[in-house]
Image 1: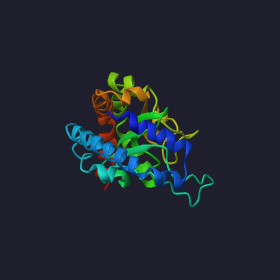
Image 2 (image 1 turned 30 degrees about the vertical axis):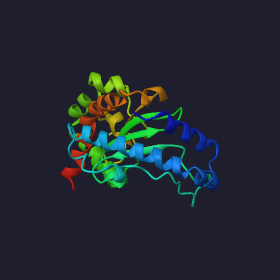
Image 3 (image 1 turned 90 degrees about the vertical axis):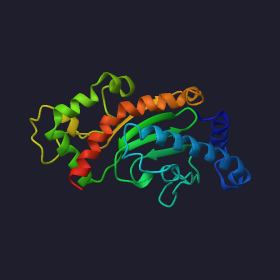
Image 4 (image 1 turned 60 degrees about the vertical axis):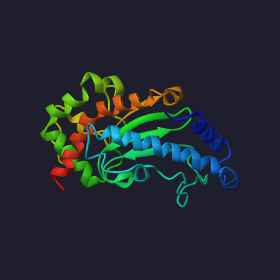
Length: 222
């Protein structure tokens, strides 16, 4: 579970997003970050039961820094009002599909896949789907997958067929995505229940065949 104090800290940070306040509350931040790290370690252990490769990481390598990169942003708030972790081979900076946990008051979600892949990676994924479309369709239409993520992947889509693929391909919609990700929004209260780890496992287990398909494509062409 993610404790109530974590949500209280993040809510206060959103209202006081400045270095002075953060420095005054650094001890609180460190405590909540350490507890989040402990939880992510448990999540990694659970993921290893159904996706061993993605579990080849650790909590420290998976958790995103709370500091924002404001060098090229008009938004100069120095901190993210959330905790996030991406569990995948290579951690948060890896190039593989993985499992993401986002903790933010009023905006919690579980997600996964590959977000903003570079053009060569995106082409590899599209080629894999094109060559194995029946398998891909079966994965994203299973009852467990639809239960958690609905019938559409997340993110933007191209308006027309991507270059290099026949425009009359029957399942062209599967090739139009700019990201290959899925997500499930969660109420804050779900995160704060002792049973939350069970929800994480259920959601990520349903996501696993999707991630394994994407990672197989990348591994085959590595």
